[in-house]
Length: 209
Ligand code: TMP
Figure 1 (tube, helix red, strand yellow):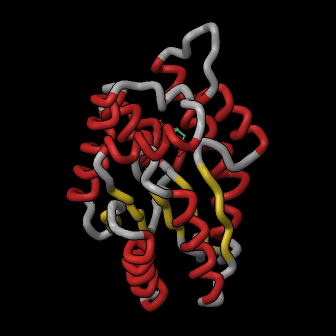
Figure 2 (cartoon, protein in one colour):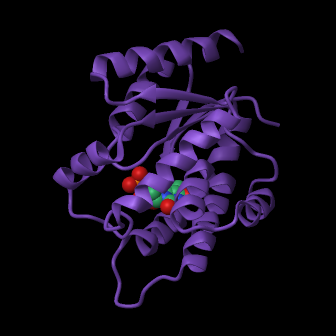
């Protein structure tokens, strides 16, 4: 039985997820909530090991099918070890990426069929969905520039610009399809404006418990 709320944060590279994840956690804590923050792929020892396989460059190229299944393998572990126990004990979980990222990157970027992803999602998540998904939206050029200034590119960040256009388009389409769950923030605004917008979304969530 889920008692806490599950918030996910999404967007292409360089939209400012890390900074805003901390902001969300602090805001909820200030409102008296017990908060667990996590990320995907990752969030447990085994899921972080899977993350390394997914993000690191290797002599053997990771095939797209393995990539998709490893995303969900890490997610299965994360749900079982961290997300469900936290939600069931009344904690709020704030996660940097979740299944929308799979639809965006593996569906949009790698061109997997949505029905195939949905089948694995149902098998792994057994109905678990985010209560609110905050999508930080930014033109791909700006995001990629910010990300490349920050660190050496991982296995995803070396993808072509068109890959990320497809990723962004899927995110936007999903937000249009599920307006109740998604809250879209224009991440090209100043950080103050971005966080003001996020705060108003969180206020609604906190007042509708
Ligand atoms: P991060 O850089 O935001 O931590 O995310 C790691 C990368 O993994 C990022 O490029 C997006 C990618 N990713 C997927 O392709 N599918 C997924 O389901 C998730 C959670 C992440």
